[in-house]
Each structure stands twice: as structure tokens, then as C-alpha cells.
Length: 376
Ligand code: ATP
Ligand code: MG
Image 1 (cartoon, rainbow, N blue to C red):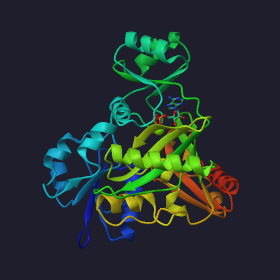
Image 2 (tube, protein in one colour; image 1 turned 135 degrees about the vertical axis):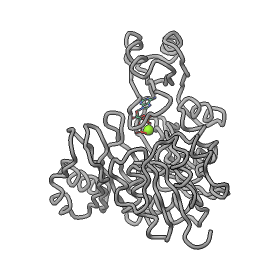
Image 3 (cartoon, rainbow, N blue to C red; image 1 turned 120 degrees about the vertical axis):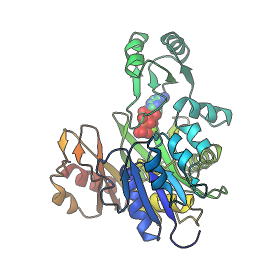
Image 4 (spheres, rainbow, N blue to C red; image 1 turned 45 degrees about the vertical axis):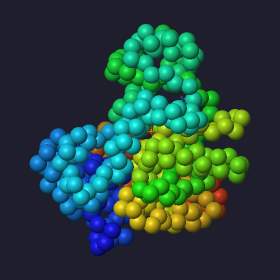
């Protein structure tokens, strides 16, 4: 691609924000289309706010695009695909999106390709859910197939008596029932993959979830080299199976016997890869842009021995205030990232802190200290 290519991003959340910032370094133009202005992309020069089915607005927005990419996988692409110029390419592509945007379809694809996954059942009624409970045992994890993220859309059930309420709470349509995976650790790896299949993996990281959502990440994961190799191989294989173009976050479970299972993938920059902004040669956001533009991928290695990331999560409702920011900025070794969301809500991701250090424990303590100073 010559000159200054244009990447049009559908969705205006923090991932789009960080993609736009990364684009400025390598002479890539970005523009953002969002359904509502929640704040993260307010600083971007070229933002359009409109409905996902507004053909005229989307046509005008997409006209200068060389590549169209996504900030989150729940975007309804119907109208955008219909009005996209024929010279633009959607990356990740429509087939990838069809495979991943429904958790049931995503699981079917993994099983078909022989990727190691835990036991699951697709359930369309309370009756079939009861049968799944008998087959998979309790506790069981129920997942709404679409529009689920950060644990919104997941329910764990301890017994058959909880099924009816959980099924209704998840929409009462279909759910993916998963057998409980007694994992020892959760791992994740970002992979950047170009259209021709060339791919590079980032280090394997350990992820820590609170209330079903990512709370902290330690880099690298403290696992034997052989486990890291298998996790990396699984992540690269998953990127290929779903034919991902761009970066893809691959979430995995490590079992006590050393097995590594796939949990799920997200074909975009991912919370567990935010550390790459401060701790790797090339960030996941820059590599996403390079990959969707079919440009050479950047070095994915760590710049130092260890890093850690801690999310800044809301605990009240109202306009965001970022109290304590000065104290957070004063923590050595820590890099503070705020997403510019106008409003805070309990559980909402408002920013993150990455810290580097001589070892993971030091890095984690620095990141946690800075993150705890900020009251978004
Ligand atoms: P996110 O957007 O944060 O990735 P999500 O809403 O897509 O979350 P999952 O990744 O499927 O949801 O699940 C969130 C967390 O719930 C996992 O990281 C893990 O801690 C736990 N979890 C999910 N599935 C299982 C399972 N089958 N057994 C045990 N724990 C599970
Ligand atoms: Mg997940």
C-alpha cells in the first residue's frame, strides 16, 4: 500500500482510541464511526456518530477507506458491508466475524478444527439446559452467545435449581452451557496475522479475572517453557483456524496436568495485550494496523524482563473525575492510560496502568499502586 492509507474503524471505544493513537506513528490515517459518543474517540480528528443501519452516513464514512476494521465484534455489519466501496477490504473478514461473533458457532468451529476445548452444549430451551446440566455436571458456566463481553452475558450456576433464573437472565433464547474448567491459571497470547497467513505471537501472559472480567495481567506468565510453547502454538493455530487478519486475542486455560485448553478468541486488540504499548517493541495496536494493511509485522518481543497491567475499573456512577491522577502519575515505572469516557459506572473499564520492572512481582506492585490511586 502506497502513501498514507486510510483505515476506517467501526466502533468508538478504547480500542479504537488506542488504534488511532498508534496510527499517527506510522503515517496511517484513521477515521471512526460510532453509534454514540461515549468519549474515547473525541480526540480523533475524523469521527462520525450515526446508527449502524444509516446507509447514507456509512457510505460517506467508508468512501475514503482502504481497509475497514472493528473496535468490537458485536457491530452489526449488514449495512456497512452493503455500502462499502468495492476497493476497500473488511479485515478481519466476514467469515471470521461469522465464526466468532456467536459463542456457539465459535465453539463449533474450534471443535471441527480439533482445537483443545472443554466440554460444551448448545442449548435452546430450559429442557435442553437441564439435560446439559446432567451431562456436564455442576457448577456449570452459561454464556449468552452474542453481545457478551467483560463477563456481561455469563452466569455460573451451582445447581439445577438455578437454571430457570439464569436462563431467563441471559435472554431466554439460546445459551452455550460449558462444563466447569478447573483451571490452575488463565493464559492469553496476542497474535498478529497478515492476509497471506504470516503471523507473529506476543509472549504468553497470565491473566487474572475479577467478576468474570480481566483485572490484571502478568508478563511473562510464570509457566514452564514447554507450557509457554504449547500455548503459543495453540494461539497461532487458532488465528489460522478462524482465518484472522489483524491481531487476535487468544484466551486459554492451563490445567493442573499441564494441558492447555482454548477458552475463546477475540479478533481485535485485546485487554490482555494492552501491556504491549509500554512493554514491547511494537504495540498490539500498531501491529493490528500493519496486519490489516498487509504491511510487515513489527517485533513482538518484550523490551525488559517483566511487566504487569492492572485495569482501572469504575465503582460508582456519574461523570468521570479521575481523582488521584497526580498520585498515580508519580509512581515510577508505571504508565497510566485513561480512556476518556465521559461517564463512570460500576464495573466499567475506565483505563489501565502498565508497569515494567526487574520481575513480575515488582511490576505488578507498581501497576497496582498507580491504579489504586485513581478514582475514575
Ligand atoms: P471477556 O470479554 O472478559 O473475555 P467474556 O464475557 O467473553 O469475557 P469469557 O472469557 O468466556 O467471557 O469468560 C470470562 C471468565 O469467566 C473467564 O476468563 C474465566 O475466568 C471464567 N470462565 C469462563 N468459562 C469458564 C468455564 N467453562 N469454567 C470456569 N471458568 C470459566
Ligand atoms: Mg474472555
